[in-house]
Length: 136
Image 1 (cartoon, rainbow, N blue to C red):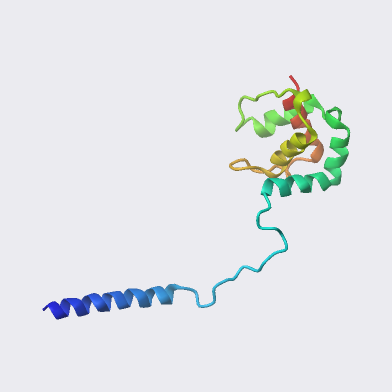
Image 2 (cartoon, rainbow, N blue to C red):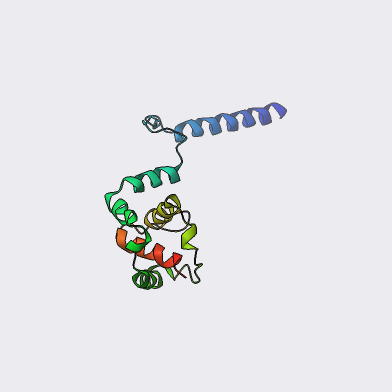
């Protein structure tokens, strides 16, 4: 009886191993190496892409004066208010160009649970929203 229990246990283990081997893919997908550095921060890559985007360069070259506060508030109410019911107004004079570029990047490309709006808003509209957030 003891031998039968050991044989049954051994056969069960062998069957489990066999099923695992059959379930595994025969030709595993191997990721091909890329030329990108593995430690590159996605936020940095996004910011660098924004820094070279001609539309963003043109808009940010003019600074905050390129944005339309009224239009930005309307766009915010229409596009953003469903998730961002109350907004915080930031002190515009404390923002540096990298911070402005980063904020434009978040709206364009998204972050965490926030979807990107780059395909639904123009660069000018995104800048208008940022300027509206920065204006008391």
